[in-house]
Image (tube, rainbow, N blue to C red; front, side, top):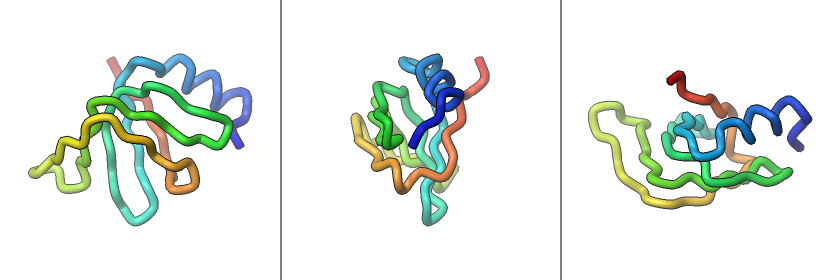
Length: 76
């Protein structure tokens, strides 16, 4: 479950690009379109960047919160 600080950071990241690391060493990048209390994420314009030299465009996806290990806002 998201705590207040996590919720605040995610709210500030809505509409911005975030990096998401998943279990199994997958990495995604996309615009945070939404989230819920279970840390389920909606990523728009998402890309699988697990292989840096071969990013795969995924479009709009929903990432299940229990697969997320790290969410990081990207610096502007």
